[in-house]
Image 1 (cartoon, rainbow, N blue to C red):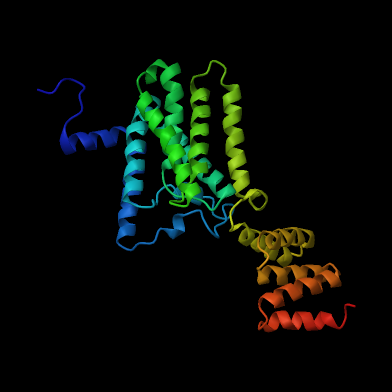
Image 2: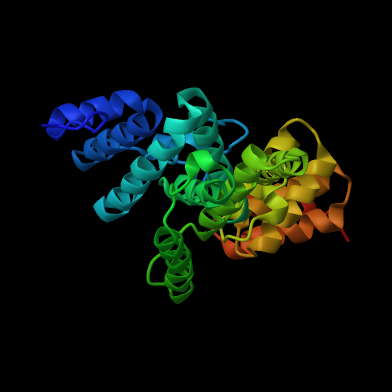
Length: 312
């Protein structure tokens, strides 16, 4: 005999659980389905905020990047904790509030990772955010009593530092900024839900969100620490030159060549910018740098020859 209120065993119980927690269950099912599709050759690259992507032009990538994963172990770990912890949140707060929290915990950590580095994939930021939230709520809100075991919290803290070690040693690249940002945002959101005076926590949550999104868009060229930052600066320089924003093109162009000196396209674009600013000597030097890097390029050679007889 099954006691009243106990979950049904087997498939029926699982389906009932999924129906009762559609946000947690739906997130898990979509992630698993997409990674299964990837295993059969379906590309998920168009869902990932990384490399040459522009968050301002494709803002949905901050959400869709949580769905692809870097392997079955990565996927299994993330979906298991999102399912276990997400249900505990959803059972108390309801699906609509949980959906809003999931969206924040999805986009902010990955935006922070993309702002500082090359971006990342997976639900780890959501998982760390849920741990942070439930760590606060389990201690301050009786509705969440026992929602997070201290052993689980310690596991996530230990894994955070293990992942830093893996990245630092070059064994495995891990989105550590996303982990940290997810945990901090989760703590702040937890406080905003249960503090007697939640105003400061809510302001902090808004500030973290704006900082991550602003860093991943408007300020990325200035704050990004990855080797790919020169590509973003170069694209910005080209676009600024196209619309005749010469000061913007100059600033972005200088950032591109400062980040990577062996970047002939950026040097050429910088030379064109200097030419339009009537800075002939600087333009010639930029064209000569481009030609030195690619001596057989006729465009660079023509630019040097055309200015060589004019600039003393």
